[in-house]
Amino acid sequence: MKRLLQACCLFLPLIATAAATMVIRDFEAPRHDRFYTGANKDFIGDPYDWSGVGRATSGTWATLVSDSYFISATHFHPAVGSNVTFWETNSLTDPSHTYPVTGGQQIGGTDLWVGWFGTAVDASLERYPVLDLTDPSAYLGLVQYNYGVNHRVGLNVTEGIGLETVGASTGLVWYADYNNLDTPSVGGDETFLQGGDSGGPTFNVVSGQLALIGIHWAISDEFPRTNEGELFVDSAVPAYIPDINGVLASQGQALMVIPEPSSELLLCCILALGVATTRRRSRPETP
Image (cartoon, rainbow, N blue to C red; front, side, top):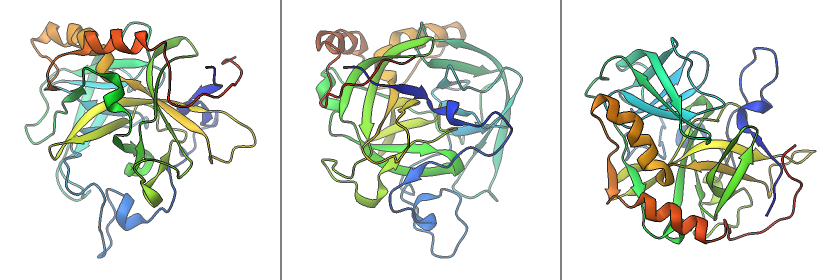
């Protein structure tokens, strides 16, 4: 299966303008904007802790996975020396914490990038576990919580597993599409990524807790763009748990994993599937 994909941030114009905001099918600010300030706020993400999702001054993203380490995208990550801000709650008037990035490393040849701060972040900020399921097919049909530009949160459903090459990176991915035909249905909360969303996180909810499964990487590229029927991919974080832990180990840290460590088996199972997905489309290779 071949798809024409581009890294999400490549849709940003060459001049310094605001990134396009993540599409949500029936967008409602009180429901989908984390920092909405109106009296009728009914944020879809209110039951969960978003304090570990930070943003750099460059517009890039950082998702905390331990006391001083975060995950982002290789092609669009906070630069060393830049500042990343995390907010304790879903209100911009509540306390926030800002830290300078002191280092970072690409994970193999993938689009996953692990960065770190020179100190442990505040205890109020969430460190997200990674959902690591032995059977890769167990991820299919799980509802995703997608975080993107303007601190919007929407939903989608994992519909496929595959291997993709975009630019200089190759990695295992989760596929999700934008067609309002998901099972289970996510209705008007359905998301589609846009420019600037690269490096942002995708979560599943496990026992009432956000668990990281993906980092936004790329979107299908069809012109003229309509979004309808198109797909996006996230780097599949669980497949790279040993590699990420190899970076964290230098500071005596490690990922929190639920329900149990099994990523090497997961990686083997995905490769054994012949990088199959639940839907097949024929498209030209990435130029």
